[in-house]
Every structure is written in C-alpha cells, then in structure tokens.
Image (cartoon, rainbow, N blue to C red; front, side, top):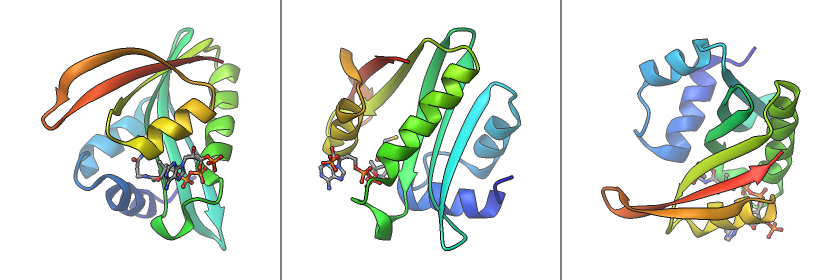
Length: 135
Ligand SMILES: CC(C)(COP(=O)(O)OP(=O)(O)OC[C@H]1O[C@@H](n2cnc3c(N)ncnc32)[C@H](O)[C@@H]1OP(=O)(O)O)[C@@H](O)C(=O)NCCC(=O)NCCS
C-alpha cells in the first residue's frame, strides 16, 4: 500500500498543482483506478496512475523523481502498468500529453504508443496529443 503523503509529494514535484490532494485521494479510492509504483532505497521513486473501464484503459500521469530521471524507471514502470491493465481486461490504452512535453512524447513513442490526433488548445498554453497503444 502506497504512502499517500509520499505519493502526493512526488505527484506535486512532477506536475505542480495540477491535481489537488482531494482529486488524488478520490482517484485512488476508485476501484477502476490502477496505480503502479517503483521504489529506490525504500523511497518512492516513480509512479504511474491510470484507469481501466471495460476493455479500454487510460493513462493519467506518470512521474519519476527528478534526481532519478533518465535511468529507465518510467519505461519499466509503463510495462508494469500495461501488464496490470491487461490483467484487468484492457485491450487498448489511451493518453493525452502536452505537445511540447518532448520527453513524455518520446517516452510514449518508445513504449509503443502512436499518435491518434491533436486537440488544439486543449491546455491553456498548449495542444494535446492523443496517443494510443494496443496492450
Ligand atoms: C516523463 C518522465 C516520466 C520520464 O521519466 P524517466 O524515468 O526519466 O524516463 P526513462 O529514463 O524511463 O526514459 C524513457 C524514455 O523517455 C525519453 N526521455 C527520458 N528523458 C528524456 C530527456 N531528458 N529528453 C528527451 N527524452 C527523454 C526517452 O525516449 C527515453 O528513452 P531512451 O532512454 O531509450 O532514450 C519524467 O521526465 C517526469 O517525471 N517528468 C515530469 C512529469 C511528466 O511530464 N510526465 C509525463 C506526462 S503525464
């Protein structure tokens, strides 16, 4: 069981204030939500959060502790997440990512995601790229 405060601290370090504490807590209580974590020296190092609804999954967030980036943690965690989603019956995983988040887009492409569409001005300051991968 993940320590909520540790998870919220990492979420905030990775995404600023995009999710409130309440949003995160509510998502974790949802039986459809899927959370996978990775630890280094007993401390939370990376997390990925998504949801499975019937045969479709969605990835909401993936984040690695800033001092541990570039070491393959996110790539490995995505594989773990996909396995968990498959185990729950999902056949496809979708995600939305800021078009200017080159690091994330590159991570997703290396992990087998393909661009499906662009949602112009989806974010106040950026377009969203919708990506998808068969699980
Ligand atoms: C995106 C993020 C999760 C990547 O985590 P990470 O553990 O550093 O990623 P990995 O080391 O597993 O790298 C996997 C791939 O991501 C891409 N990547 C990682 N760091 C990169 C960088 N600095 N520049 C460009 N691409 C990069 C590469 O394609 C890399 O594959 P490669 O090592 O074969 O080149 C991390 O940068 C992060 O937490 N960012 C803030 C939160 C965020 O934007 N999340 C994504 C949107 S939900």
